[in-house]
Image 1 (cartoon, rainbow, N blue to C red):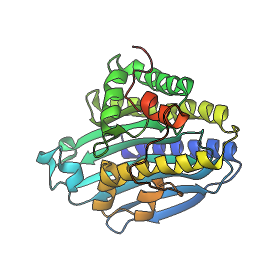
Image 2 (cartoon, rainbow, N blue to C red):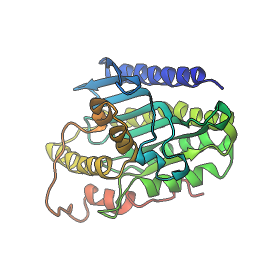
Image 3 (cartoon, one colour):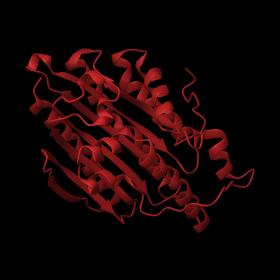
Length: 301
């Protein structure tokens, strides 16, 4: 399998998602093509101040370097110092309506080069996760069901494994709380062989629109108040904290000399913090924390 095949898939996925979200929003994504001085480049697609999306970013990158960054070699110390390349698509959508959840999706390939092509070490990673501001069980079940169905052809163990991995990864250790209601996440994955590991990664990327758009259509026209927007901005603060403190992708991008604007396009445009705030008992805001941000088994498996 050539890099050209993998790259063409990622570029096509980026365009398919951009086209679908442009149709949903009614606005167009800016296209920003960039080059990285140390090697490679990418295409950032950005929509800001849309009808649906307050900010949305869908980035493609294909970057390479002479020496593996510390954030990538920490779990593979035997690869430290190798030349490397990485490519993939990453997106975050921050809707305007607080009843529409924020969503993240990423699919990627990483290759550490050896003395010859036969010595190259590759792996795939990715997943998607949902971060609601108001909890709806039917939305959570739908999102997880689509993730389950996408992974099932590659083994009945994949969804429960990757669901648990997602719950553990997207967790704010300093606050001891999940970022959202999870989804699936995998990294350093090559156990099915290159072709099938890539096929599984494609299945996750291809499932994104089916997982997210039905939720958007159910919630986008719900009326909301200024107080609910304020709660959304407060909860978005958790998103920022995770990305800047714990996210390996953000750290890798910054440590590898990536393009800062593209790396940080995942940040929400309006955020606030309050000191030791707790929503009043019995409210929908309190229910989000008590009933949804718990690592629940949404499919009853």
